[in-house]
Image (cartoon, rainbow, N blue to C red):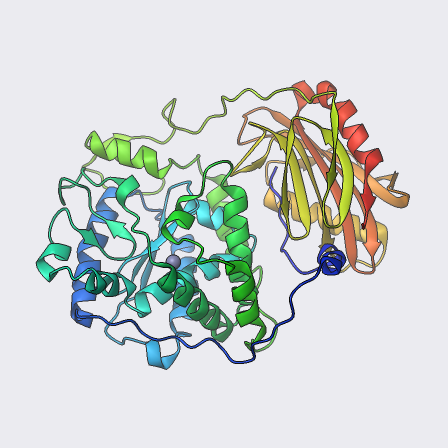
Length: 482
Ligand SMILES: [Zn+2]
């Protein structure tokens, strides 16, 4: 089950204030100095076009017309919001979706941008997705790829030629530009910390100009690092944190004006996310690379692709991301989890994955990019409903929207959660991750006016008896506040 709710500064954040947020001292926006560049704007365009052609040949793209229109519309909104002093009218910004599960995106010099399906699926709202795109656009607008080559003092023929570093956080395969030789692992050129900070600052500004909440750029970094599971997500290794990233983006964001209500979840975003989630599992970038090395191209049938290329269907056994991990049963030994706003007892072999207004608990193998399969999610969300039952229904609707395979199996019944009168209901359905029937039990109660406290336990049906004691302990041990 995935969490599906926009992150806002809520109850949990309010409780966390006591641990002290540093006051914003600076009042001026951070200045951006365009780095020195010995290449021409036309060089950027030429370079980007050359690489884009190869990417489009090599990577499976999602050709769903509605999703394609959607990503272009977000892209256009953002490019129109680039401050005039950083605009290059010659650049041709364009946007494609790559059918890869990794939470990643990349932009090439002169304008071509590729957003992975995994990134769209992971974003909590359109603002978070737009945040990554705005950051990427900023690298392009500031011409960071060729600026980095300028610094390295590389001649043009070297950067354009085979085997050399090329722009937009990309590197061609060691053995050159031949198709089938592109090593995805080596693709992502690390930008310098200075450039990263520039892309964050300009990205925040583009967000605000475009009508997004620039805080969502900061939030997306948390979403990405949280969903990375164990290893560092690839996007973060090519866009390293210059230090204090979350804070300085939020500080910059606090100085920016957004006209009207910032864009959060749009019908277009929900539809695109739903579409991505309804498709067969996407290959990873590594699988795409391995296929490419064998001269094959991933082709998902419904996503189009090169009909002449050798085929490897994403549903092939062994490449579909089918769930094969075994998950340890909950330990009967307990440990105390103490977060900023909640304390409770969990099995000692469960990990915690906290974010701003929620925390997830799961054993090794019980969670991944697609959410939790064994464990619990606890958090506070903002709701419109004023009474407890309306609020519970609202939360349930959000869960069902984000997890279309689930169905409500029982009506709401009253439940006492942490001394508060609340409601519980049970959902189930065939998990796209495990392929088995998943049981989700939701418990909700009002935390404060307009804020709903929820607990959702998740387990495959055939393992549920082994989890009941752990879930019961978790529920009865919760205390809020600190
Ligand atoms: Zn970056």
